Length: 484
Ligand code: NAD
Image 1: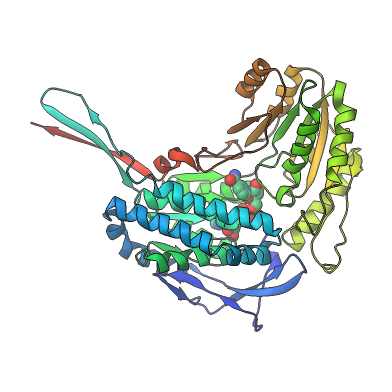
Image 2 (image 1 turned 45 degrees about the vertical axis):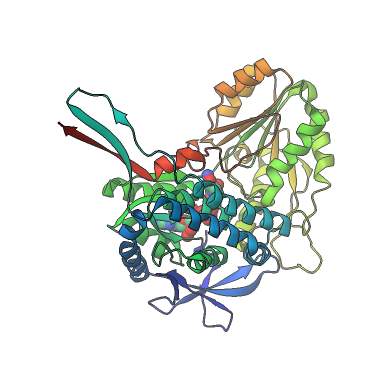
């Protein structure tokens, strides 16, 4: 999706370069890509268009830093992580402005994202003392122990919807496990990842521990995944690219974490607090203009309360204002794509309850805004119920019994999130148990924290980010047996 939004340019816009070996580095080929700000559709930045040569430079820098970082005293490593968390917070307004210019998201969302990013460094920085192995009682004349060892160089490839947050989510546990990193943010939203790496150098991270190469997925992302010295890749993005990376990783026999898309079910039973569930359901598909992998876009509602619930959601949707609480869609192609689903919905016979078109935002006439949109009378086979739209679009599907709800929730290629609303705790636990998704929320929407492991079932990916669990995905176990 990204390539056709970007054109090589020689304009005089501000340039953004790679961060390699603790300093800013221009692209080996001298090329830059021009990005647009989705708020106004105007060009706003020239981003280094990296190549495999730039990746090789970054990997060299990472190799130079690798042994030093691995043997860094744990307490010092932790202190640096905490210092970076503080630096991100100290610079939160500036970072949020960058994120807003790149992605158009409202300031409140951008600030929350920077805070979340700081928390990753804080959380993982505080885990440096975590025991890393066991002593095993195998035989009386043997001392057998296990230890966790870093992979070495981790490749981190991230999307545009939560740019710094997703980068921090992978980089922080990778570093605390003793790895060094070569990361590539989305070419559309590169600023904050570069700034994070610059701040890391400023607070004392050794050169080469965090390297950022900018550019397209085809040129830079692929080169990272293919590089012999990169021993694991953490990828967040679309299913299609996840598959392509998976094929390369299979050839190279390297592990991957794949954090991919979703079409998550939000199940509302008739005994739920319907007012709360309606407000939260609307948040669930409009947050970040619906450009969230864990968006609750499939709202399954028990038939006895279906009409009343759709009406409540329609009312709640009136408070979601494009240009205020609702940001734009990221790029012209994605903007077109979201609108193409409005046509698909009409063709498939869904009933438009609200929205369903471009939103006019005064002062941002050329921005990529769509109205927050709700469809009713949808069935689970329609394309708008099966495909990830990645816009502020919710679809309401009626169901009759608990069995139907579970069957429909699981009748999806994805399995990232499941939410359910019911005052019957036995039913809530029963249904939570049966939904095939990595995270389940009961009577609350999406309250995730850095502590909660996150990841998908089915096409939503594999491996887990966040929490203590993620550290184990950035290290492997060595067993040592000593006979005495
Ligand atoms: P994308 O897959 O197009 O791009 C993601 C990243 O991969 C970008 O940095 C891109 O440049 C790079 N890339 C593209 N082609 C590549 C290739 N051939 N080899 C290596 N790298 C390549 O995704 P996007 O459009 O940026 O992001 C939206 C998608 O991300 C959605 O599907 C969304 O659900 C998913 N997402 C998932 C999570 C999660 O945690 N599960 C979080 C955020 C976004």
